Image (cartoon, rainbow over all chains, first blue to last red; front, top):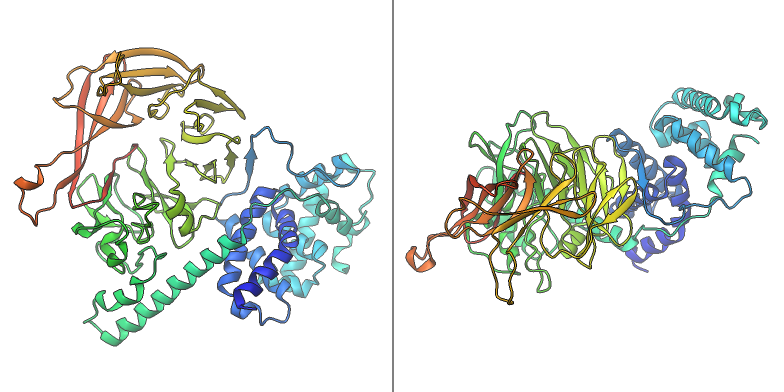
Amino acid sequence: MSPDDEYTAYVSGRLPWLRRVAYLLCQDWHRADDLVQSAITRLYVKWRRARAADDLDAYVRVILVRVFLAEQRGGWFSRVRVTHAPPAAPAAHENHDLALDLRRALTAVPPRQRATLVLRFHCDLSVEQTAQVLGCSTGTVKSQTARGLAALRAELGPSYSHVPYPHLTHTEER
Amino acid sequence: MDTKDLFDTLAAEEQPPTAVDVRRAVAAGRATRRRRRTALAAGGLAVCLAGTFTWHGLEGQVRGDRTATVVHDAPDKDTLPASGVSPLSHAYYDWCGEKWSPGKGSAFAGRDCVQWRVVTRDGRTYRMPEAAGVYLDQTAANYMNTAAPLEITPDGRRVAYYSAKDEKFAVRDLASGQIWLSPQTVSHEEMVKNAPIVVLSPDGRFLVLNGRLRAVVDMETGRVTDVPQGWQPMSVAEGGSRVIVTNDRSRYGLLEDGEVRPFSGALEESLSRLAPDGRTVAYLDGGASSTDEYRPDDTVVTLDATTGKALRRVKFRDAPKGFRPWRIGSWRGPTEVVVTAVVTDRPRWERKPTEPARTGETAYAIDVTTGKVRKLGTYTFRGWSGSVVIPGT
């Protein structure tokens, strides 16, 4: 199998996962696709090094998060879809309202804090691993996590007061 | 529900069909690798030859590369400064002033003179290395697509272009030097194959992207508005809320508040940008003809874009002899629309065999209420082929 074949096989296989992480970072499937497209292009350029990495998924995740943060610094952040097509992402679970509220709440969390939350709570990374991905200290990860959760709580608070979030106040213990 | 459950709730959403294209990533990645190799080779040679280096030394390495857009980043006195540039008069590319044939672009590989050149109103000319210039890789199918698009706002203060390095469209404010990148990734191959164009709003804040992208981007906030399926955006008004769209059945329409209101009937003519009132558009017409005989345009017609209905038809007045406008663009005030006509030089047999033609366009303003035509300026270069971009057209 040539390196290009390996690359194509890997990216094709991991595309759903990459899109999901990108979606959690930006809450928009179209933009998530743009992020993934940029990330896998960079991955191709670095493929020789990437395929030799101990954890290829981790390598790609770093690229994706950095693409997201870099584009965020560039100033663009939202997309309006005005077609008559049905909403792009119907929730697969019963509580559709909850999903909408969560998405809106996450959008209100600053991008770097959001990236920290996604890495820690969706990707299950430790504080140290998250610091490595974001290229910052563990102290920064802790403070970003705390602030991100506070922002999330502030957004979700009144409308979901009946939903307990015990761990939101105990993030540093993870 | 803990924080992880919260994220899992979102992650569980069903994924819509993806627009991610792995083949495009491979092609774009290869292009990036090639550019890096070329840059490294150039750096190595420059050190070795120390002062005696010419681009001919590199030509052989790039010549066979049919996907490389020539971009040399080394700034010099001819390179567009990072900021403090006065408004532009026009831009052009001229294939280095040399003869060029379709499909023979690779002969120009490695030469800075195939980049876009911008000319300021005070007469300074700069190369623009960050903007992709001519394509070296036309094929028989797309040989007319010779250069990456470039657009200048009517006031000459902002310029939109395709950044080969970023594989994105970019808008640059010439005075401040600020550059905004569009979010969408577009490979060089796609640029060559599909020839996407860019159009700016009069203030340069909104960028229209047609083709696959089909969107209007607010470059300052990053807000992207997708145009409904079946329609392509053509131009956007100041403020970004109104977009002129067209479809493949020669219908135009106005996109506003998420709805396209089609104009009544098909229209084969090119439409102007939206006037400063945000609702008037114009086109040129050859008038009524009972036969199929070609009649040059002699009338300007205005439409109300919100209703699609014609407002008035006015015959040209005081037009120069042989006036043949071929492009209609932006507005110069509430009643004057800008059109351009191709400059015709002396025929080839009256020039020396080695003397290239004076090539370019003349811009005119037509008053849509009176039909009065007045000349704004002529923008030319000496060359065998190439193109001129005039602000707002």
